[in-house]
Length: 366
Image (cartoon, rainbow, N blue to C red; front, side):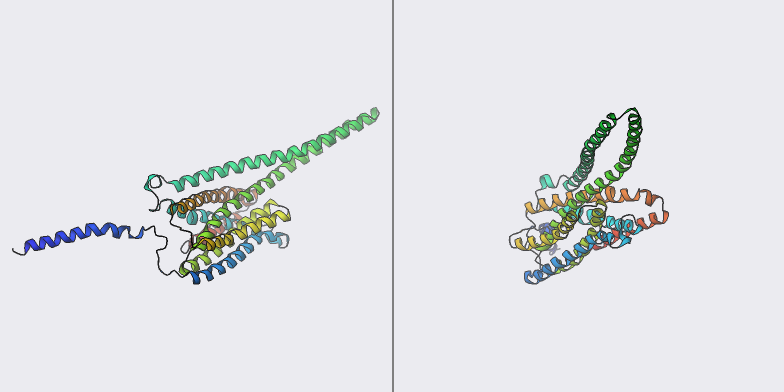
């Protein structure tokens, strides 16, 4: 009995220690110290970063150029089945990139314990920004398409009116027999021209649509490519850089295939095509170079860096998900060519799942 008070005192001391130490143990991984973390060797990491610039640049250039080789390789032309399969695979990659790679990063950044609880902890800003970006992309998509379509045909109509007026003037100067011929030929001209215009309009509208889609898609890809490039460039650990380099190389290659397919269908002039391909290929390497340059002063756990990265990642995710589902998958899967060919329809679905699965698998490392 004499030792019971001592045991009670020991139990109270242990309970007190648990109550004091437990919060620090639970919050031990919620540090905002950007320099924390073992295995940081900046000199060794720099070698892999330089290698990543070369590998990602090459992968992006090859990926975006494969669909552009349709003029040389007949199988890669937009009207061929292989082209639809390549686009389905690339659309799966872009969809998985937005939902599995980019959006979770946005949630991590905007719910970080380094940010103030009010307002960042009380509202799902990442999902909200992604939703606004998707709706904004829809608006840009529709308004840009309608604007370019109207401007294109408004330029074509004055030339048609001038041609009709010249035909009328020449016919009026003739005799009655010539006038009769004028009525006949003018009516024929109007009929033939109307058929050509109506037959040409859907093709032209579709071409303008592809051009808008390719430009908006490139915008969404470029935004998150720069961010992931900066993230890789600022990392000081070789253990982090190595798997990121491999994952981003495949990531850039597959995304390049999707963008290259859209550029091919848009039928830009050679100069515009080269500029768009170069711009895509250089964005991630440029981001890595920027990250290397600011690695000594950049604090990835600062509130400003977390908010900027989170907002841009969320916006990029919204753009990519919209583009993948609406402009790439829905447009191709609902086309007459795919709908009228059961075998092609099955293959497109398989390639879509394969592309999404490959990109989802890469989320284990990046």
